[in-house]
Amino acid sequence: MRLAVTLAFVSLVCGLVYFVFSHPSLDHLAELERELVSLQAQNDELAEHNESLERQIRALRDDPRLAQRRARESVGLARPDELIFQFEEPDEERAVRVRLGVDEDGMELAGRPVTLETLAGRLRALHDEMPQAALSVEVADQITPIERQRVVDIVEQSPLGPGRFDDEQR
Image (cartoon, rainbow, N blue to C red; front, side, top):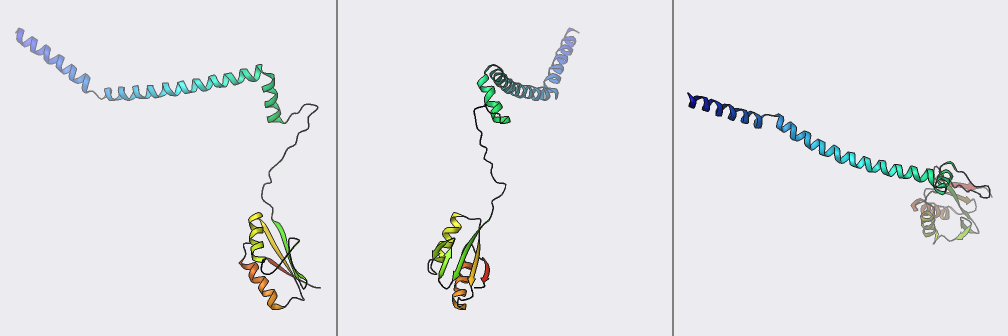
């Protein structure tokens, strides 16, 4: 009988040990411990951030120079003897109209004389300097159709082309 009680007791203990170590709650416990470590690390980061913010608050409250600088930057305040200049960026680039005038005396691009041979290079250089430029071409009636067509061909092949052609009445 004593052997039966001992065997029953050992079986019960083995059963309990098996149940405890094979229960799915152990996996859940390990997952919760990992989450706890992660949350503690996140909490430490937030605590450091809070300390940094508290230092900034103390500096703003206690250092008048810093408070003065913040007020000047955020609100645009100035001392009585100061003059503030504010430069604003344009919302969009504005197109610049560049004139190419062609008449019997020669050609003029943006107010400077240019020849037919150098026109293509000057148009490329102008585009590099001012990519938003729009070309306006004014051709006098005295220009021969061949000369006019050469100018049109050069302008259309340039980065600024095709330009707006206005025939002058002279």
